[in-house]
Image (cartoon, rainbow, N blue to C red):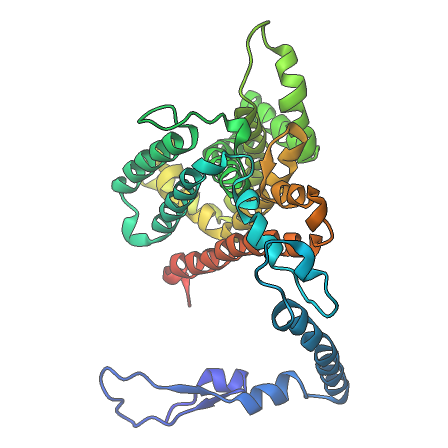
Length: 380
């Protein structure tokens, strides 16, 4: 018989006995002992037992009222707010029913909102396809090029009989996705160059990269957006203007690239010197060594901080309100301007928070999957 090392480390797992000659194609099975896990993690000592019972009591006090407010006594559909104002009424999800199109699509013309809806579905489809390893080939770049072109045609219009819609009328989920995804995609190659430049032996390149990174990281994003929106046009020649959405994307890109560069630099510094020496021994030049050996390992190491910055960038798009763009959080807040529904602010913010959570949770879980997949060859 063999002793399972996991059983020795964690008594919550029980070992199933195996024959001396295991059956081909049938690996040894493990069963999870709920009672053992509970005893070890929740009732292992008197203090832990007291804390567990206290937490259970607090959950018992908190969960039933929340469930009753959010589900059982909630008003799910109503044309007016009167049904939500009666005594004993819970959450007024009728507010979301009445205002969801404005929250999702902002000031986009009501009769044309099918266009941003199709664009969002196509955008999410491209992101989902990019996450599947089977699609990691040159065809993916072509799919993104075609997909972004179609999304642009749908959002702007002006061709194929579609009404032209200025990007100042964009808002909600489409604007949040555009700002975050385009900002992240554009910032990633710039961040790699900044990280490599900061570790360069050339003083001029290193000084420029260090100055840029420290300058951008030393100010909040709201200042960068303010400079891009208010100050930058003052330096342009008279009569020359830059689109407001483009300025917001540029500000988010520069800000994100500085933080990503520091994360990538950490990955480059964590690699053992032997990796560099092995690459030199193969006769590779600087760019071959960086592209084939150094950079792939460094990026694999820093997946968690990279994804953390991606999530932060996605949430920070709410700051574009200072330059007059209506992202998801701003449209949820603006929907409360209707006096009839103003008191139901909790439902509006919960709906927006649920959307933010879905995207952030997906990025978090996918990063864990990607980390496990890329670490397969390094496990011991």
